Image 1 (cartoon, rainbow, N blue to C red):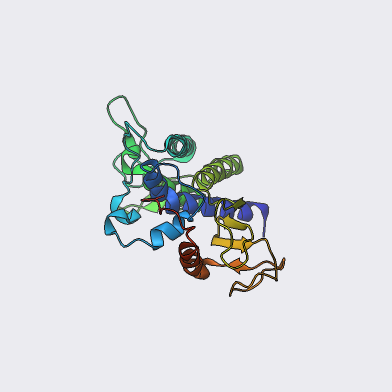
Image 2 (cartoon, rainbow, N blue to C red):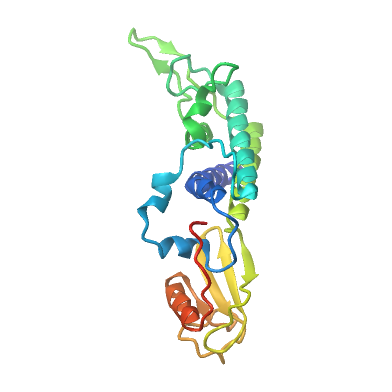
Amino acid sequence: MTSAAIAHRETVAALRTIQNLWGELLLVIETPPADVWPPRQLAHTMRDDDALLVEDRAPLVLREHPAPLNVTALDAGLDVERQVFDLADTLAAAIQHAAPGDPRRWDYRSPTSPGSRRHGLHWACVWIEGRLLDQDTEPEQQLDGTLAAAPFDVLPPRLLHETRRTVQACAGRILRTLELDERATPVPGRPCPWCGGELTLHTGPDQGPAVTCSTGPACRAPVMLDGRGRRVWEWGDLPDLVAALAAAGHLGDLPLAA
């Protein structure tokens, strides 16, 4: 695979990470910072409240938050939104030929109109992905049989690399804010219910959360060992760990949403 193909693939993946997690980030803005335990994803799973579903509550455009409960998340959202919108402006200025009124066109904001920004971050990511994939870069036949210029030029290498850098930085910012980046975090005040060992929460961008016990094979917890000989509760095992911690009096309160 060529370096350009790798750059395209990684950039599209980062754009989709932004899209997939944007609603989660908007919900976190409305939620006080949570403790390490329980994992945010598990708190969502254990709830049966349709009002808390991301699909139902999250707006597509970052709205005003006069009293945000999580300022760190708000700062991240504002920064990501600004960078993605500015990137779309940059690409449009360099390669766009689509006429006004063409639904494929990216419209700039003005003192009287937000332009295409009114459609929100998701639309901006979709539009940028189209430019990465060189969509609509061939001349188009008109009704009279003549050819019109393509709506967009092919994305040149310098803009491909700028796009890659920007969207990967934005995706990383969201992952860190949601604590979904690659990290291992000790779970304070909640020892292993089977042996008293220290529990550690492991998260990553492409996997569900997992928990390990520091004791090793001597721990009698009814779960498998990982590659380092630690008892590990994978995603499907975590409800059992929650129940065991609750029985031991170490569950703690589930956050309303996180």
